[in-house]
Length: 266
Image (tube, rainbow, N blue to C red; front, side, top):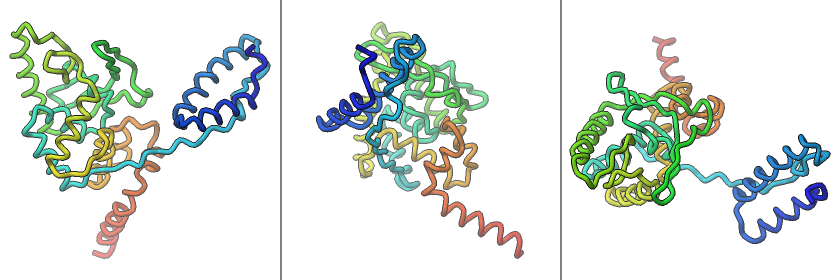
């Protein structure tokens, strides 16, 4: 019965899950689902208190993020430009969007005159089925400025798709990034081609998600305001951006201090 479950029971369950080799992330997700159910039970007066309160969870190890250097970015873009994957990977590298965000972009999200893309949804693809969902949080809904060379690549992709639509084998799709048949592009396919192009460019293998970190690091290195970078990435707050990329900031602060000193001592 739900009323007989205690903190000790949950603590024992999570310890057993951890011993079986399940990840801390899986245990955290399990606790979140149970916590939601128990809160509802408390509201319905089926429970006096939520047994999830006070339970210790194993720490989730944050994956160490990596970022490409400027020189590596150039080599990677050179390799990607010779492939059909250039538009999606160039956009990922320069905007810092999450894969679920840029794979959900529609042509109507592009403002060609202003050179921007509106991030307003995510996509989840499973087999031949897909669903759209809201962005991760409210601040994740944003307008992102696109580089001119990315806009040019997108224009070329749009023209190519319009020609393909004349073929019966190509399905009509509002999405920008689609497979050869016009279906939504799967993230695992992009990951595979990304790794292949890294090898072509003789760059160490990194995660597809690390292109997001690369975009942020490049922006900070170029002297872009952390507020602007935080808005571009759709972070919950500027403080999160500062904490996430604190390792990049000291060199930028050194450069800023040198410039201020030059102004004062000129």
